[in-house]
Image (cartoon, rainbow, N blue to C red; front, side, top):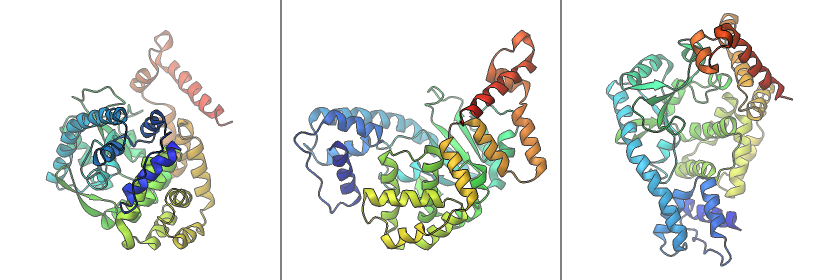
Length: 383
């Protein structure tokens, strides 16, 4: 009952012409609050309660306000970083596409950063601008959060690097940072199939934190959102993710290009996530995606390779050995694969000491035994 009530309220947010439901008399408000936190919707419902005074019990609205004020206090500090980073990129005439939450804050959430939790701002830049973008962040006092096995490892083999400011007062893991992307999904198999230049050509203008940037086209955004939910969150059922994807469709309206969506899903090898999530969106909000278009997308046939990579990526999302194997298989050329294998299996002494602690008997090569044992544990989990 509580989940049905939450879903009905979201339906009103998506379709304002539909009436806001009246809460049943026996609704468990403690359960409603727990679900709102779990599904990332506390801020949305706080605003809804403010717009409809008396809709929630006073205690419920106060709990939602506490959550919202926490997000607003965090956001007051975070938006300053967002502005400074985007302004620095714009001053350097370096084009960026903003992804996910910070494109939704000025659109779906009307600029209200107290309605949505966010850990960072994700930016896409062209590979040819990657070093310049990293240098800009470095000059601003940002540093990479990942301890690289060898200097330049992430630039050689990865498409994403996370940065946090040296003066960031929060603990690592809760800090606000910058995700710098040279591709969309941080998985080599997919990023090799997604032209970043094409993303820029189809992108749309948007103002974020007072700075003009770019955002993905609606079709690119929806396919990307499907892939991100599948590959990075293993089809997590958090309603805020589906609510935000639904808003992409509704904002585009009749201009949404379903043929382009199908082409992108096939070209990017994201057929399976796109099919599955369109079905789920129509289960939550019947008719939000036209039935004939959903049926046409359902006729797409993922390649054997897509099936294999998708299933392994989703089933073993937290398994670092599987992730390294998939990245290795996606690399072009035997030489690059060989170097990746060596640098991954045998990181630098500095990395080994930081990652695995003091070496036995003071002899750092023994740390490779610890690394091998950790990899073996990851392999055994596949069973």
